[in-house]
Length: 274
Image (cartoon, rainbow, N blue to C red; front, side, top):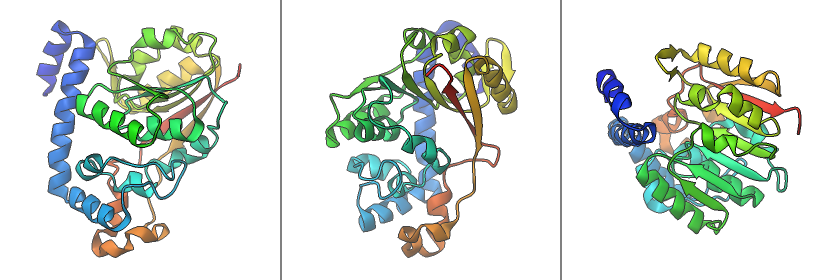
């Protein structure tokens, strides 16, 4: 969807409807890109060799549905190298630490189901794209945590405002919506909750936020109630992953297709009131 159509759609359609349309178009486009790059073929070769169970990292043992593993770029999640920068915090998410976990932008359920399996904590998974929600349901069932994982299509500021005085973990990858989602009054409601937020370019009304402006805006909003750490993406070292060596010249591609620039950042906001 080009920028003009996005502006028209936002003017006449509810935000959740626009998000669903955009996310479906993005996943359709991304599927074609993955096929063109050869990464789906790499995923198939990896699954044939190693299966559909996550090998390493905080979600080791998590099982992927076969169709999901073969139609998404699953090599990095099955290997356990995906977003390794967040592993120290994820290892610190232990049973009983939080009342509830919210995964905003859950995709196929890697974090939502992985965290439910790891901590036995109730998880709310929010994903605007219908096929991804179905994969998340399948993954939750496959891993025996369907009763812990509740799947929803939309998370807005009102959803988070209901968490006042609760101790939760908010995991956000909402593709540029974070400035609108984490409004000052929302952050006040999250004074006892920890947040892991992937930072993107985004919009707030008529104003466009470059990535750096998004980070600074969120830092200013969270500073009164949370201790803030900024984590930067680090390039992968293929020698650390012997499981991909059988791919030969494609081994590096197997671990480097996260589509990250060197400027990719995450904000880890730890509540002082916890």
